Length: 186
Image (cartoon, rainbow, N blue to C red; front, side, top):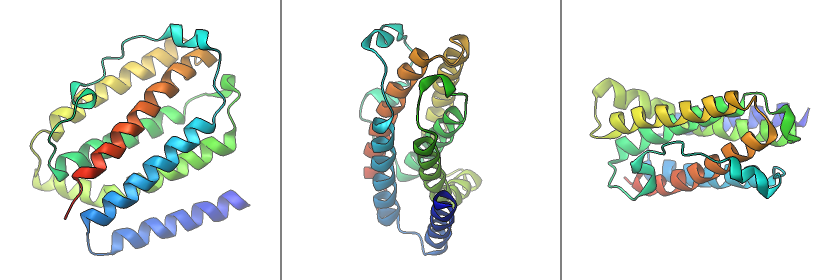
């Protein structure tokens, strides 16, 4: 019951923010807050033994994520939207072997959905106008990176250690997402 009310409130908030005149500064503030909430939710998930981190591999994180780049706000929106969409897709996979709380995952998915919902109208407009410089290339690199994460989970049969490794990657992604919000200025 509580989750249903929470989802309705989030949807109402999302629809009301997209109906307002666009303010990139406000959007940046909302996205930064949501990324922090998402990161906090991920930290609440129980971790597994340190030995699982030995199962890490190089997922070929795009260079744009490893070092600070100069993004235009349009590029930042495209990258943020793609990252959120991919993270959402990963977290809807089978995580039953992890012992993670379904409630926390549901709350995280609601938060991600709200973030995507705020970005989507602007993302569509940018794509229609083709008003971006490097975002499209970065999005292609991101798709490959997230595909590597998905293949890794699948090859490890979604086991607890694989999820631990992927969780660490997603936590790193949220740090990058928070830094991207700095590019959202009016």
